[in-house]
Length: 116
Image 1 (cartoon, rainbow, N blue to C red):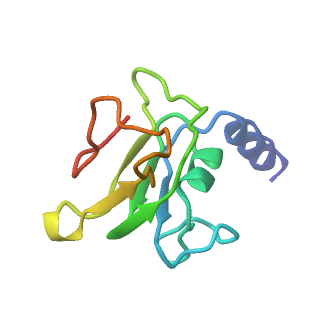
Image 2: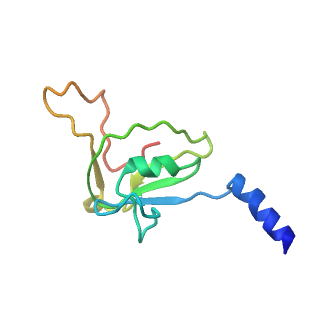
């Protein structure tokens, strides 16, 4: 029994499996980020994500500014994508830039595709 406990502690330090974190417009950042208890913000999922993890967004519009300061690895990227592959259920990320805000799009558009 002691050997199993020691092995689990060692394994938890270098996680060998990917985790899916879920985001929903009616989620809450105090929840677990699971499909049944999703986070509310992309920022919260990014805080806990590690290389190889996925951040899956339920359908809806996410009006959030997110500063991403973590990185995956070439062979284990952190992926942010819609939960559904059905275009009618795609998530929309709206950074909230308005005319005169000084914020603008630098030549890219996120829609319906995974973003690493």
